Image 1 (cartoon, one colour):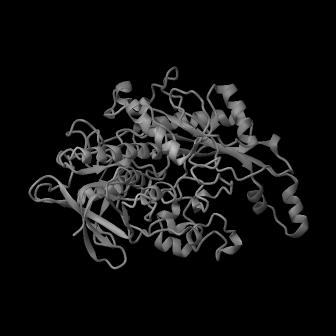
Image 2: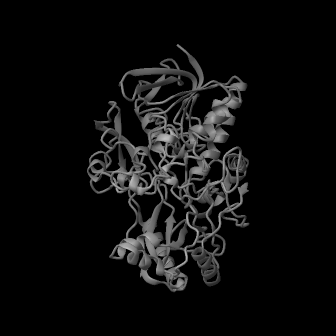
Image 3: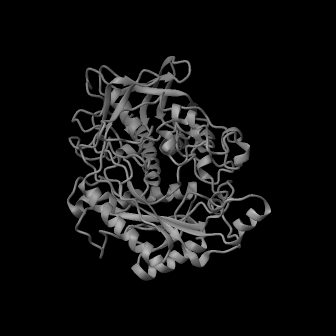
Length: 560
């Protein structure tokens, strides 16, 4: 029986950073990943043309409906990249009839980092100390100042392109040069900044704009959700895992579906984990002095809930009944846009930029109070020529048809708003008492819905979007949706094993250690106390970097 220093469950944004930090500090790490490896030459399709595919990119709809009825609802799950997403029949979950939830998952080495949207934003004390500002909920036990050096380290290593704006609500970072805005986005910047006084800036993304640490710059094919053969955006198999591998201290086991922790019957500590081989269904144990769960917010919580014993009858970390509660996901108001008539042209603008524009949060910050709701929202959007969409709508064929397509290419502007979800105890997950997955592991039953605060915020978001559409003086205007996006759609699920100093209100402490178990740590989005209105991935990586350092220091002091 081999005893590792640390087992890391999960190989995505969080697990990759934990493994890098631990191995570079001398620890022997076993990483367990539920899915297979992905081979760029075989699995990445960003340079594949529609005519090279059997269904011309639209996919075998019968197969998608049969095997991936939930996953196909994600914009990135199509004929090009559906293999990056789980089989819904092998990986079911349940919900109450009146509370639908859209759970998008990627089980492979790298997790969802092959097809994430790459937005990389820092949180501030508007997020970490939100409760101190408005009195709702709990503060994080850490502050922006404590996490700032880890944001620096992560950005400097993975490469984040962005502009320096000097904003209190969105700190500048260690940026590569920003991507350029399109002509339409530059027009939007001019109009919106003049009319409303809101900053419009290039999105901050983990796409390289210059060569960085041996990786080439983005070549602007603009199909990032299909993988990146040149590794010009961050994914863990191309960036953090190779760093861990070079130390010679990383053992990576793919197709290993972890079901639960192996708990010591004599004391409150884990001996390792139990896992099931994905294809053979053989059961295996792995042993280590410490365990890090980095399997994604809901999967890590599922493992903890399923780790039942006489000492922990309700699961590890659930002594106070907090585990599984306070689930959050961003909600969006989408569909707003229209044609910018002044930019219609027969000339082609250079295309392929994977970066649009961002309008940072302004509401409920200094000087912009809105007493209808707590917290706030931000906008993102883009503007580009609609050559191919226009071509599909024009009847005809041959030379005459091609001439029609090229004569006047329309220019489309689109924008959406993304809002913060409040952490509520009644948004929670539990183990379903009857349904199990393909490996015999109890699945999650997810209870999640948006509340009055989200609905009030959504109304303000729609009002602002309509004001922006009016200021842009667009043609063929499409008004924003009247409906909130379904819970889970934004794939930013956070909470359920939240961090805190008080064991009665949280699952892990400020060092990510389970309160009542000495050697189990959780490092993914499940530890979030609040979510803000910004994407969580950069913060997950900064937290994971910090945890790796803290665990290594605990080993040095012989505490683990």
